[in-house]
Image (cartoon, rainbow, N blue to C red):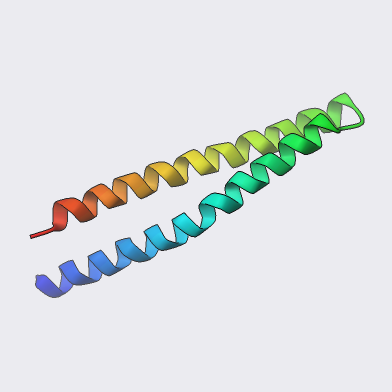
Length: 79
């Protein structure tokens, strides 16, 4: 129904809004851990920080993909 469609559009826009806000935070976290890895005192801490940076970069890619997917869905829902 039209009400369901409007609710879905609101839901999608809310998800996009939160994901867009999260993007720079994920970027900054990745940079933070990369920097920590460069300055790590030993091999263990370097490896841990590099793994943490990779996780943040994966989060970033997932958020970017989610935003693109949802924007495409919004576009397809236009009358």
